[in-house]
Image 1: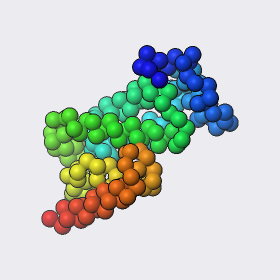
Image 2: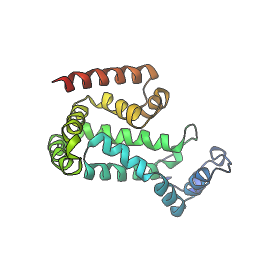
Image 3: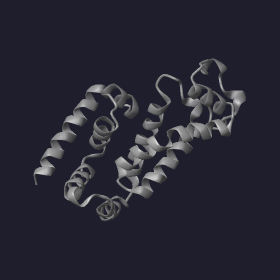
Image 4: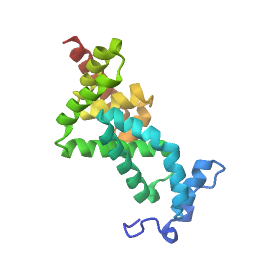
Length: 192
């Protein structure tokens, strides 16, 4: 599809849109036909999950909100590229991972954001668990980007390696290797 398409229902191939009684598929189909209300429903059904994963990647409330917005803007623009080969939420998570990785590559605010997160976190975490939670979060934030993404998707979000591979556009074995590396680096960091 060309960029000029931008949700033009006349240019959406009808044979790509499956028939289903699943309400999510109906909302996607209606959104593909240009219904902003249907896309609003998709947004409402998925925004908390997308925000949650963005926050886990960034450990920054404002940045997570910004990335969440970018995810849904991208999803709206690229909705015609959704092929029903995976769950819609998996497709959104792949967009979130890509948004996060693009941000990490280009952002110079990460260090300042992490320091601010540590300050904010102290106010929200129970005093008894404060040191442990901050140490763990700081250790996670020090992980390489790919390893951090796999760790969060697998251990926190509960995705299987084949789903992570699809989300991040990597091989299943690569996902397993990143997880192994992330856990090893976490253990080493927490022993310090």
